[in-house]
View 1 (tube, rainbow, N blue to C red):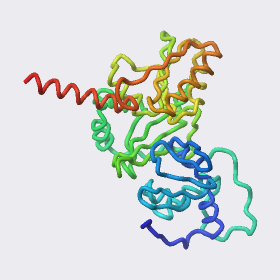
View 2 (cartoon, helix red, strand yellow):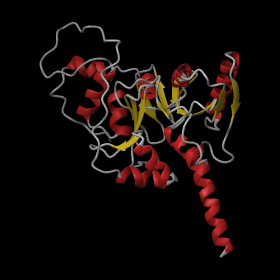
View 3 (cartoon, rainbow, N blue to C red):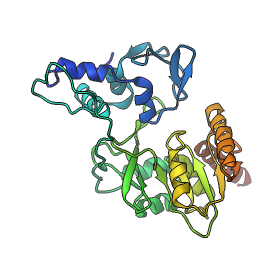
View 4 (cartoon, rainbow, N blue to C red):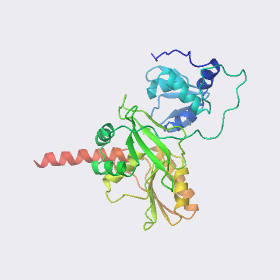
Length: 314
């Protein structure tokens, strides 16, 4: 049963705006990989999820369903007030306690203001979570020291920080450190510029860039290949805007190494990217993990293999 909360601080029109949120757009913003199958939408992460008419969802594996508000309650750990406030901001509105005019003004198209979440005094939860995911402590510490990773104060999420060419933070992706039902909270901070996403600085002496879907995949690759400390982009999905920006800022780059997931959507995107960027004059290659669907699964698998080998040699 989904949590029920009082709606007294919101007007009926504000709640209607929140309920009417376009779910495929919202889930894409939250980092899910949304795909259309016939008359409905689903996601790679939850293939039992069905989104119909873009406004309602149902998950047949546990017989839950509803609208955008109930989705944030069920899968993102938000209460009613937090969910409605989040969705009003997402739709370009600000929640108000006082009555609003009978006719709503059109939703603003400009991006909401971006601000990084407040930082926790230490990185204990982030460090423990990423170590559980197999990321080397030296890699974690390196990302923290570079200002690309920290722990937020409110929910102890991992915050992956994307910076523009001038080093200013313009994007942040949050990943919950408490997994629930095998899938923790994840989503972009409101106002994030998806055309930058998460990336390492570019070394002008190198003519290549490696491209990943998620920050944890990028960090997994850095754990597997300790010499990689630059020239990498995590798209935080399959949007090519971050790669376009990186190439535009670093015109000396000639080679692109696509390290996307080894599943169907990842490889379909890789082939599409290869055709597009080859046509633009880049030398494009595709690199996939030897095991698992992504680089973190491969990292964990390899760690398990090494432990088994060590045990057998004792």
